[in-house]
Length: 119
Image 1 (cartoon, rainbow, N blue to C red):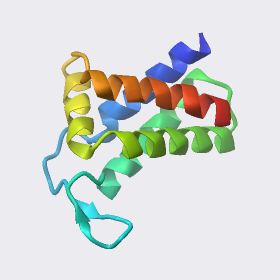
Image 2: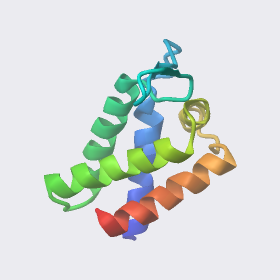
Image 3: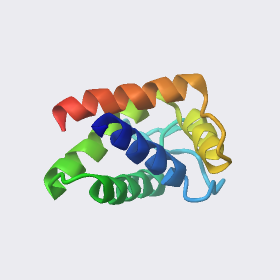
């Protein structure tokens, strides 16, 4: 049951992640200071974290610190494995009640499993 709720949290966060699918710049400065086409824009990261936290608090009794840790963990996990274009495709799929790309779905589920243990 808890896993199903955490899946819901991540799916909802992904659905809100792009903030309505805005197609403004999809590149941002990476950690090396260079432009990266697959890096997630800061506004998308912030929206994902806000949405994840709101959903997690509504479906669980986790403390604020655990929610922040869990949501940060899932975002880090997803960003390391799903490029921004694929993340946007998953966002569009969620917005239209379709399935996200297979790879993205697998990563989202793995993020939940991984972060649930550490969160």
